[in-house]
Length: 410
Image (cartoon, rainbow, N blue to C red):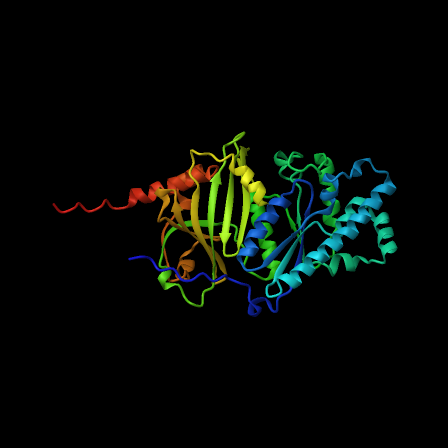
């Protein structure tokens, strides 16, 4: 009998949980090579899945530098003039994004993820020049720092605590030595002292743990469930026919295409399809350094996505699956139902961002039947650097535990 799936309804943040729809402004700042780009890509995915309209406000300094500005060659007066123009432009850009959110996503809570914020200018020009800028434009520190943003998340540079991963290669606008990066990082974090919701995300643990802490901080500032530090993947059986009518969810299709490996890196492009919306993402898992692997993610344009597909590794079939996200007892769950490659068809996994204790098991949705915690399996750890092989290993494990088919009667 064909499995019954209910009609898809998007899980949305409701007025009952957050009040009337409004625009939340969140600054993502930090020192050079701190992981801002990856953090914002992860935040955009997570918050969109939870029902927010998410807008990423780009960093104006990078746009001007890649467009021809050369602040490293400017005189002191020219540099201050450039920073003043950036400050005006950044505020105008943020305000225009807020205007778009208010008019085009009026029925939703919107989040503006701002790549740096107004007070960052203080770190670059110094206290005296900054005060002159304020006076010339009739601005105040409370206006720029306290009234514009709901939260400020500062990511500490890799030059402090993760020195092996500090690099200038992935950002044309980055030019700081490690010592300069450490100094700038301190000035940037201090510039925001006094904001009501400032969070400092340091480099303890792995890079992925750092990204989890970023998401925790942002979700906490928004008042929505955030990730936990110890995620788990389970092989499960799901009774979709027993899905409660009152349990809202978001559902979309994912297609992972794996690219040819270069320099030990594993890269994949993902197409995320849902009604009236398709987005594209790139994930690059770097070579292992001192037992740790760097992972970066970013959002792609359609043109970038199509260009990268030319590099597809034909020996590794695309992975296609349906993902359903929902919140149950203040925990965030992801259900993946695999369709291809053929050996994965019928496999269903559950992702939860916290260990599943005996008490948690008692609170699981009634349609979830836990089969095995695959994060405890040896192959899950040893193949962490290769998500395609790990998926195939999971499919092999499931097929090996299935009872053989009953012999046919003569």
